[in-house]
Length: 219
Image (cartoon, rainbow, N blue to C red):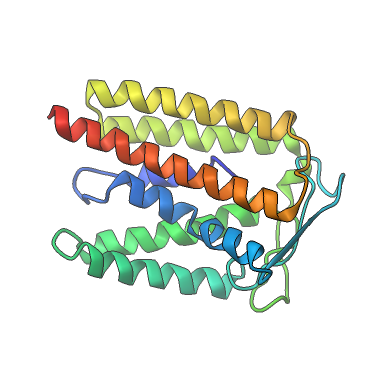
């Protein structure tokens, strides 16, 4: 799953919990934020096998530190602690728990779409429901999650200027996911894929930051 993860960020964000949207954008992709440099350092592994699923060629055969169940729980706890300490002036326990949940939601959503490549611990007992093999259904699910969450977000947080920005941003995410699902070709190398992913995740979090900053200036 790719842009569907951001649905959790939109759905969790409210004015009441005061969690910055960009923090949630980082949280829902934290496992992949870590995965990319781990691949670059050779700590985790990916290769490309055309036809391994109907949606993409990813053979994620070794990622015990970021995408195992125990790993996901560990990084969720780390995120809870970092948010609680780093934003101690505004961070309630419930808000910090939501940040931790946002991190763990990545593993839960990946469980639905991945082939059995998500280990429970270390590199063993791998699970995955394999919805990537049902490309059309997976695409509808992913976009549906994102669009539904956007509506929830706008109802809870919307100001006119931000509504326009969020709608445009989500439209871009939908276009990227469409290309990713139906047009994309396998990348040239694992390093190129990891770097590209890291750039996308960083840019998306930056856009989320700018959208909220724009609203703060206009308020």
